[in-house]
Image (cartoon, rainbow over all chains, first blue to last red; front, side):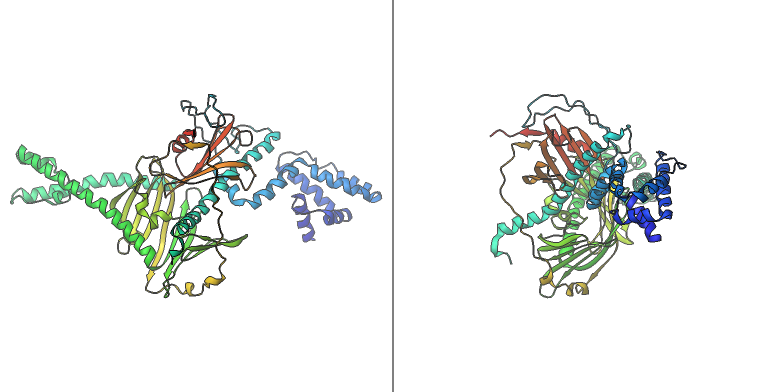
Length: 193
Length: 377
């Protein structure tokens, strides 16, 4: 039973694939009640409160399911379409892989207001224009400026690009000494002991 | 922050106490020497300024001579001290390359957890040099060096080896092994004695010559020359990062651990491709004193696959990366991020994106980023 609860919880968080647990929920009223309650809790915790506790959708869905098991497939896509899960899952997976880099960025990202209006504008090789260079924009994921929901992907994408550069920098430092060692041994050749 | 306030307190109290102490010494001496024959007072030997009372007692000419003599002795003392700073670093280099030692130290970065390390070094009977650096918390990270091959054992990564004469740990290897290479970029000043980790230590300040990089304070064990503590300070003197030795032992024979290392079972060193690259059509025209280009290449970032033109610069203590990308592929905006130690600065003019990453002050990163110029062949 507790194992089922754990699975249910994990399924809600999008951590496991749900075929088995969906079947279990389908056949177990206690699990159905939990499924509903967990969603209410989550909604309340996130202050969405979009699921009214008195609204018993799952019971009626279950009743409908008893006659039509084929409805299961659309149910799964419904789960994927819950906006928060859809967005969070890929990012959570990614941040697991690059936990170090992500933690760096979290530490890094509190905005620095750094205005440098009188810095000379330099023509780069691809762009010899004299576009005025503004002050550096403060950026923060702590939401010092309100971010609308649909910007979330963009913010994550930016964070990913920042992380890519920071991770690359750290990797280059790791490899730097090795490279120097290689160059030195190449230079001195086979005379080295 | 807590560290820096404590440090500041120490400095303040030090400043207040020192002159008061010096004055009390010389004034007691004055009362004694007034009725005896004039003799060199301890204040003169120490190179202290003669206090006002003695000037009043003596004739004006004598006072002036005395003052000149004092200034000379102070100049002599300064040169002595700066010589000894490099002597101390030579002692550090000597013990780290030639001794069998075991050192436990912790690394603290402001706002992060303290990381403990174990560091061992041994010269085996056959003359081979072994070194080990082990991260002591969590799943750990182990680096083993056998002569000039460093093997890295990390969780979730296949063990690999690199050809390198030093383990790349939290202590900058240039400081340990090649302090002379840092003299273009940094000035070493011996400060004096202190007590660290329960031992008498010699303190050395490391300051960048053009004041464009963070500074360091280094404490070495007086009897052995072993590193005891290393602080990294920002330009205002606030503490950024600290390495503190908690225990160390120097033994006549190498640690038993090393005899269990079978160097044949370590992964063979990876061959790094050193294919010569087409040189970039840009270059930086400003670099802090003593910083030089280590390498340049064009490649894809591991995480996003973006193509970047890349240059790595180093002054031995800090490394700075410069990236140039097309702006529409990159962030496309101007942005500066900083944690306590590292600076991430990215600038764009709408077409190209220049990013500077490294442990340097934001002003320096900005100066480097703004100094990019197209190379005219």
